[in-house]
Length: 431
Image (cartoon, rainbow, N blue to C red; front, side, top):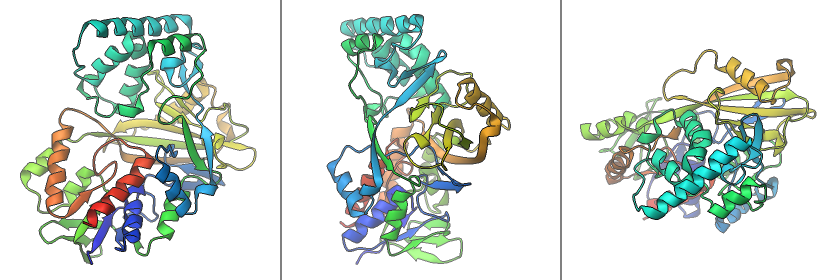
């Protein structure tokens, strides 16, 4: 029987091990942290439950429902229709902004609708392909939507020149309405759910850790607090910090690709050079447990305006029981350069921003505060990324290492993608 080792007990790694077991080939899972879940974890403090940023299950595949049922968690999840907004110019309009400009000031509404029409007319007379994400936004949505939302929001999220970003990642993640949709949205007439995240599942109580905990309980060999010191491709062996050596026939690696390259002892110089060009941002996630009722009914808000340090605010207690009675939670997300510390005044600036937006009435209402960091969090899709990832994937594959999941494959993906990235890697490992 093949010896399969899974590096990382995030959602992809746990799913990989689960599906290996279903195929009759139990895998060893090695995890640096003290609990399973990776980025899909929940921190408890003072009776509050805080996920590491908003982790919501957006399901498009019927087999995902079957998997949740097999894990025994489907009945513990509640279905929600998305309530998300864009906070802009002193008001909040529903997301996506492309079809919900009716609540915005009329000058902004005019800019967006007119720009969309002009962009559509330009496209009808030219067949040129946008050369960057910035060009794609202008080509698809026009100058108004670009200036008021897409450009400031994505600059805050990715901390990079949008002319340097490609459009590989946009796919299903950016709704692209028709002209009639935009016109209806300007008058408040558009009512249809739009986008991959128009609905979602979330645990009725306790936070998103429900899912990785269910996976971990079903697995025979998940080794927590087990950091890996080195990876040797030629010997097909991992060296743990304890000094123990773990051999594999197939290694399913879910660790961030640059981390994997760093720990691999026998990669050629060209592979290391390719990894140096991979870019990402980290996310500082500030979580507040607050006395009183939630200030708004949305599940989350997008914040494009540059004077606010955060790009998104979540209100998790609006979709799950994650706070004591009479309290609510706020989750603030701010991008910082990967590997660099957050500004020392970040928390104070975020609190001031929450107050200005009317999301925090008094700082004295804060019962508890938890800061977390995801690094890397979002991959930057630039022109160097595709060739570098492809070359590293082939190099590792030749040595029996399968890259799986958002960070090992250096991409953008959802929780549902993580489930099936893991399943696919188990299928490939069984060949």
